[in-house]
Picture 1: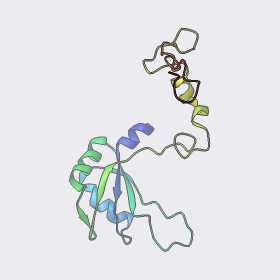
Picture 2: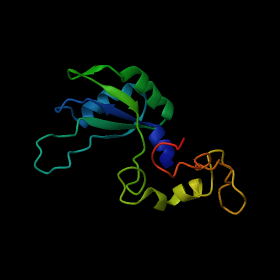
Picture 3: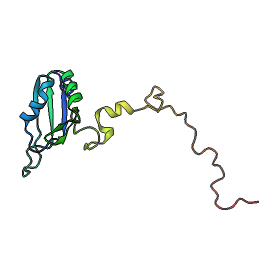
Picture 4: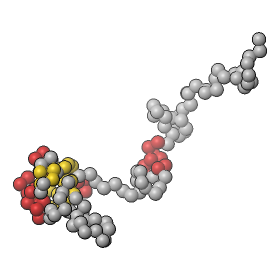
Length: 151
């Protein structure tokens, strides 16, 4: 299955109680369709006593099954907690967007998208923006002298 199609068939399940296992999540979400995989991400720290981070990803074989699970399980109670169930989002690359260690103008698509364009998207054909903006200094003649105007 293509990567984009996999994310469309995957739901995010937030608000899980610490004692919940992947088998219990599987049992709760199996009525909506065939499940490919259930992931309960572990905490990053090694000395943590938590079994998981409080959320799970449930990947279905079909995107329609994922939508059905979202419609039926969002805001439902599971082990005494209210679940937040939504469409899973594909992880962002560490090299792009906020939080990356690269300047935004050095990122691959940014310069191609923003180079030589104005707000209206016009260029002069030489990758130079068309300069039809008024001169910001126009009308300021005679203001270089401080103090009151001579009578």
